[in-house]
Each structure stands twice: as structure tokens, then as C-alpha cells.
Image (cartoon, rainbow, N blue to C red; front, side, top):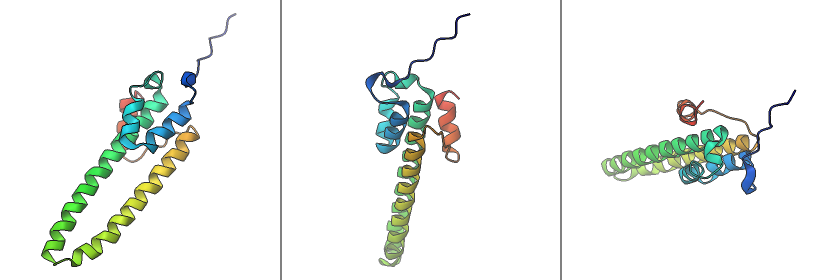
Length: 130
């Protein structure tokens, strides 16, 4: 009785799927986009999930940052700069939160664990084929 062939790892280029997932998060939307087109990673569900989640997460952060910047400029114009003094620390806290989430996702990807962010994770899972 012949056993099923063991799947070959996608690491033919020298990096494992876990490192590819980590790099998707490390280089933001660009890293995710690159790994969606590189063989053999474009066919690996875990790497595709990390790539899509990285893209969606970074796009959401960019949209949020632009929205907060617009609100900050408008409020600063109305309050003659006072709102800018309040918004700057809030935006820095937002960036710190984004950095913490990105590092968390990189650590989990390196451990080959699939962590789904709210809303974004489900979208990424659907796009990755799962």
C-alpha cells in the first residue's frame, strides 16, 4: 500500500512559509502584493492569507490616517491650533497601536499561526481561498 506523497514545502527559494508570512507584514501592503505574485508562495494558502491581511490592514491604516489628518487640519483651523495640540498625541498613540499590531502579526506568522483581525481577517481568509 503506497502512502500519499508528502507535500514539498514552498521553501524552494530558501525561505519557509512562516518567514514569507512575516515578510508580508514587515513590508506592509507592498510585501503582501509581492508575495501574491512570487512562485511558489502565490499558491500557498497561509502566505496568501498573510499577504491579503497585510494589504487590507495597511490600506485601512492609510485611510484612517488620511481621515484623522483632515479632521485635525479642520479642527486646528477652527480652534486656531489648539486641536492640533490634542490631535498630535492621539495620532502618535494610533501609530503605536498600529506598530504593536504589526509586530504581533509578524510574531504569529513566524510561528505559523493564522491570526484573523476583526473584519479584515475574514476578508483575507475569503480571498486566500479558505
